[in-house]
Image (cartoon, rainbow, N blue to C red):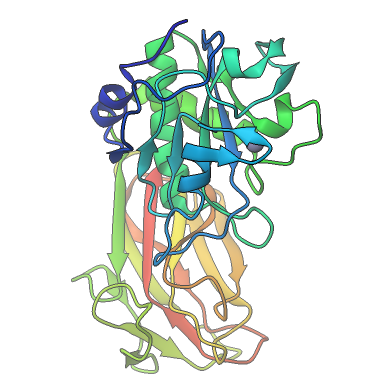
Length: 321
Ligand SMILES: [Zn+2]
């Protein structure tokens, strides 16, 4: 039976944060293991900043109906890879065949990431997504396979699995392909409301330290108004291309349920509405957009919301994909 004792080194070389979980080199299921691909899962457990890997024990030890280990690595809330096994694991069951992955024994054919989020009312965090992309690209490079060998459990399952939820698996494969082509770490830049020379807002935007979910020292807030008074984030985009745009805001029940974020793309302004009453204190993906090169105001928070509640401007991050 083959093993993948190179897994930790390959992940670390790709810039992925790794925690080695005990005797990972010898913890595995009996049976064949000759992986050609990587399979993404979600655990169905609710993770958080204060409880980043609730399913780790189950993934190591298994359940009453399924012996552990249940994956080669668990990806926690912060995007840290907890490496559990260098060998065969009970994660995939029978493969029905998907893309280049044939029908057969999924646990022989694939290396599994259990990404720790519940998949019902909790999405994968951006940290989990970015780390999983980097890890998948690195492992497929090592295996000598292209991005089509990255699959989601819902694609290979013969029993109706739904994981990983909230992920477009074709976009995932495109992001893996871009990572494999680019080699190094993708360009990324964060602008906070306090970043010198890169944030502009009128005096109508107050300064607050009220929420502990803020990014950095403080954030800005304003009442919604049917007028143009946006807070702008300026970025020096290195080259024309596709960029993932993420925003960070603190949440409060009194904040706005339909805050407009405007992205100035190569083909005009695009608006994305977010609910700032929920999912705060973390990076949230607004989407992937085509941006022109150059140093310019690129993302704005608009006050022009028809919903009630304060609109909040905290931090924005661009990452080339
Ligand atoms: Zn699964």
